[in-house]
Amino acid sequence: MLVGIVGKPSCGKSTFFKAATLAEVDIANYPFTTIKPNHAVGFVRVRDPARDFGKASNPRVGFVLGEWRFVAVDLIDVAGLVPGAHEGKGLGKEFLNDLNQADCLIHVVDVSGSGNEKGEPVDAGSYDPLNDVKFLEEELDYWYLDIMKKGWERFVRQAQQEKRPMAQALERQMSGLRVTEELAKQAMRELSLDPEQPASWPEEKLLALASLLRKQSKPMMIAANKADVAGAWENYERLKKGFPDYHVVPCSAELELALKEAGKHGVVDYIPGEKGFAIKDEAGLNDRQKQGLGFIRQFMDSHGSTGVQEVLNHAVFQLLRYKPIFPGGVTKLEDSHGNVIPDCFLMPPDATALDFAYKLHTDFGKNFVKAINVKSRLPIGKDHVLAAGDIVEIMASK
Image 1 (tube, rainbow, N blue to C red):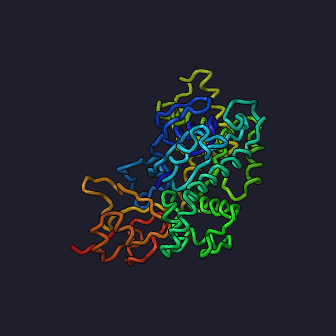
Image 2 (cartoon, one colour):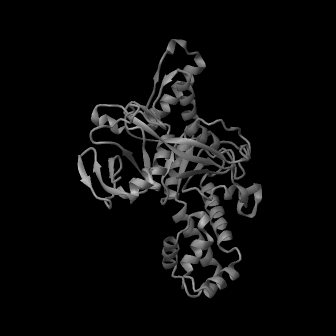
Image 3 (cartoon, one colour):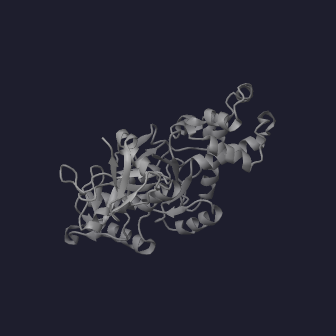
C-alpha cells in the first residue's frame, strides 16, 4: 500500500510529510522545495490487541505508546503541482507520474489562503483555497485522459481487431494507474458509453470517463492544513460545504511537527492523535517555548488534536478500508524471541483467512487446513472474511 501526498507548492505538504514520518525533508516557503519524490514510513494508529490479554505488544516494525499501536504505512510526497501540470508546467508530468502506484491521495490544502495558485506567499485570507481543490481535480483528470488517449485511434482499432472487450483494453492501457477491468465496466455503465463503439465516444465523455476512473482508482481526501492560522476555520467550513464528496480534516502539520520534535527531545510526553500532551519539566522551558506550547495546547483544546494522525488513519481505514490483522497463537502470543504479537498486516476489506495465510507465507496458503480466531478460540474457514483487529492462528498441513 502506498499513500500519496499531493498539493500545490508551499501549502505545507512537506511539513505534513515530515510531521507524519519525521523524515529529513527540505521545508521552505517557496515553490519547488521538493524536486524528487520523498519516500518514508508513516504510522496509522490502532488499539494494541495485546491489551485484551493483559499484555503489551512488542512490534517488529512500528511502536506502542500507551494503549495504542502504531503500524507502518508507506508514504510518498511529490513536488508541488501548479496549474498546467498535465501539460508539463513546473515539471508537472514527471511529478504526476510519481503518483502512478499510489493507492490513495491526501490533498494538502493551505486552508489559511496564504499562498496563491503558484504557491507564492500572499496575505493570509487573500486567496480562496477552494480553487486549489478544483485545480488539482482538473490536473488529475487531464493526466488520466492523456494516458487513456495515448494512441487512442490505434488503441481502439487494436482492441476491436483482437475482439478484446473495451473494459479489458482500458485496464491494459491504464494498468499503471491501478485501473481494473471492473472499474472500467462500472464507469462505462455509469456514463452510458457503448463498449462496442469506442471510436464514437465524444471528447467530453472521454474526459468524464477519465475523471470517474481517477476517482475510483485514486480515492482522495483533503487535509485542510494551517488550520491554526487566524481566519482559516471559516475556509475549512467552506471547503466542507463546497466539496461534500470529500472527507475534509482540519489540521496543523506545523504544530504536530513541533510536538513530535519536543517529544523526541524529552520536553513533552505526546501520543500522536491524542487531545493533549504533558510537559515534563515546565521550569526548564524558556518564555518562547512556554508560549509556543501554550498556543499548541489552546489549538488542541479547541479542535481535539493537531489532525495529522486523523488524516493518516482516515486515508488507510476509510478511503482504502484496510484493516489490521495480527498473527498469533491460541496458546502463545509470543514469538521464539519472547516478543508479544510482533507483527501486524494491513489487509484489504474483503481479505479472508486464506488470503491472510498466503500473506504470511505461500506454503501456509497452499497447505491451509483451518484458522482459529485467537480471541474467541473458535475455528474459522478459509472463506471467512476477517474483521479489523482479529488475531488469527493459521493451521497448515506439513
